[in-house]
Image (tube, rainbow, N blue to C red; front, side, top):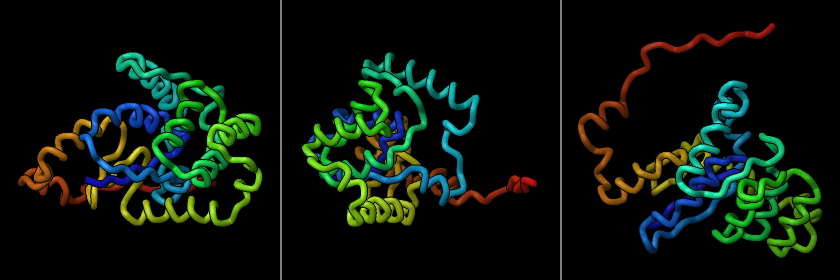
Length: 213
């Protein structure tokens, strides 16, 4: 079984998701795909959870509680959201293997370091064995790869991070792991009558757009 895992280092949920991959079936092949979450939000005309003030505080409390509950080391960086663009480019340049991806996530969410600061980016580059992080930051091929990753993910219906894509079946969010594990045991999970019905459910009403003056 091969799966694509879409992530952005800005996402603490992606970190918690990654730390539970030991629960996945042995031999499952994962392609780690860095994407820019902000570009996804813009495309789908959506807000990130940290952009809604009361939701932001709730989310940080929930993350801290959940990490402690499941035994995953967790420390918020000094500010959030942070700009993850340069760190994602470093990952692409190094090659987004499981080891490299976990190394970057650990800096942000285990050690609580701010990956938008130059000194922290230099440390990440050192850990990834990148000698010239400044060159990577402006490398057109690296920038194009991140953009292409994000556009390809959107084209396949990915709207958030973290997301697993198993062929054409999407599993979004770290809390979707149980559902994905059940799907792996039963590929017909979404083929039942009620699953088909909700997948084709019509929209009853839509919220009107508010024009700001």
